[in-house]
Structure formats: C-alpha cells, structure tokens
Image (cartoon, rainbow, N blue to C red; front, side, top):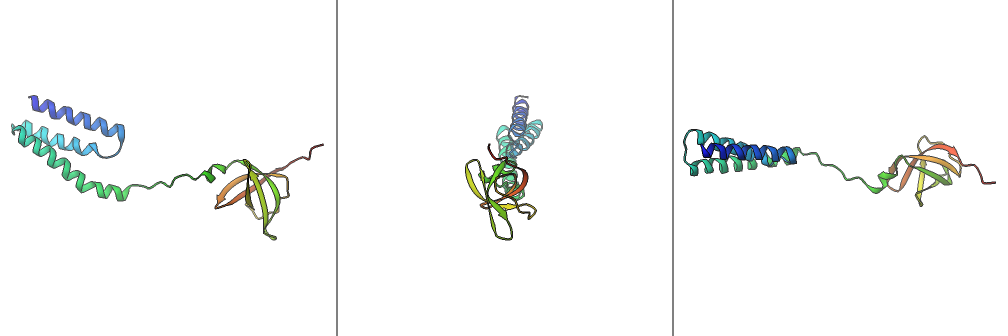
Length: 149
C-alpha cells in the first residue's frame, strides 16, 4: 500500500510540474511513475518498481527529446529596430524615390527613409513607420508640420 501511495504521489507531482513548466520533461517521469505504480499493484518488489520507473523514464526521454527538439518552433528575437514600427518620425530630407533621397528622424536617430507607396514625401512631414528593413525606415505620410510663427 505504501508503494502505491509513493508512486501515485510521484505521478501527481510530475504532472503538476509539467503543467507548471510546459517543457515536456517531467511528463516522462509521470509515465515512469505510472509504470512503477502498476508494478507495485502486482506486488513487484521495490527494487523492481524503481528499475521500471528509471527505465521507462530514461527510455522515453532518450526516444522523444531529439524529436521534440526538431519540432520545436524557433523564435527569432525581436530587434531593437522593430520597436520603431508604428511610431512616428519627421522627414528631415525629402523622400524621393526617383532621386534616391530621403531621411527621417525617429527618437533622435536619423534613418534612411523610403516611402511605402513610392510617393514623394516633403521635408517636415510627419510619417508613420510601417516597417524597418536594415537601416531603412519604410514610412507612410500622416500630415505636414506647420511652420512656427
């Protein structure tokens, strides 16, 4: 009876740990504990129960971990430049695709600016940053800045 409670407790804690971490590690120990629980139910000695627990857990980890690593989605880290998307900038040099000109200032930093739709954007225009490609801001015109009086 004691060993049934022991393996049942190990099973519950392993399942709870899996839900808490979602790393697909402790679930294999839960399966191993279920195997040991079954062995305890059929009056296998503690050494046999422990052997089943270790064997099942290790076999499952070794068999499935490489597969899970291959299937795991790799996330690309967000770049600092991506934080500019959605912000506004001021055009400090006319954006003109025909002449290959255009600069914008965003958060105190000067960037190369390219119009999202190929339009000419005059100097002093406020634009929204829609994308960042390398050192270029892709921008869309919002409104012109009114000169100070």
